[in-house]
Length: 297
Image (cartoon, rainbow, N blue to C red; front, side):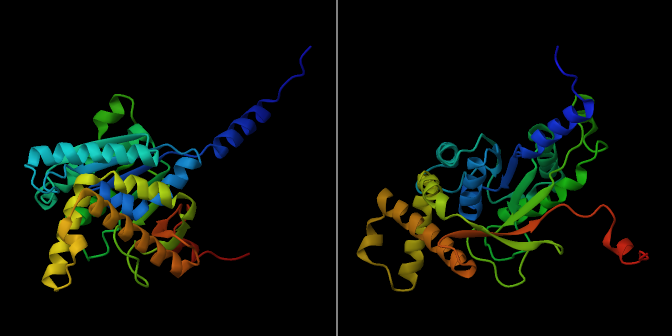
């Protein structure tokens, strides 16, 4: 005869198992380069922990190519992004295909609804998105994507997108938020919402995975190499190596930039390679202004 099992013990075991299971991660980005440079190593670490990672891309990257018409540029960049995501270990990439460079003309409510919808489908514990509090990019797509992505969790209740609630996808919002800076280290006290704190992640063990993923962005890397060559020429510093502008040169340049960026961030925090984020975790249930007035006993 089997010994009776306590209901409380079963519940405790279930809760313990749930606590040990790493939750999903959702990444919001204007294009593949943004999230790979800004968070690729950290995401690879989370994949290794057993977390499913999902990517929601807003831009079609139809203008990010050398010598390709917009339709062909979109197809080439999408294919590159899919390959890069597979290298990183991403479970799924959903590309919404909005024209790149034109996000300022699109309703932020429309963009935000996409994020809130995928919250309900993917149910991420963690959300990554561009840090829109940093104003340093000529391309404003990253700014608009970061801004609306931070606002999306406010629609986690079932009163938003009620049509989704009716078909079985009730309101949902992540519990942790990582603001990422795609192409340069943070400056002191820069970026992030007020309560956010700077968090450095050692990506030394996943740096090679990040670099291999970035190398798959062949179309975007070629454009980056061309833009770099033009800047060097304007400064009178263009050499023979850059004059060739082969796919190998473009890949080498992209790798060198990613390595230098990660090494510079790592130097700040005592790691060989690192990424850094403004991190926002779970907040106390009782607001701070209420706790300040609480009487001690």
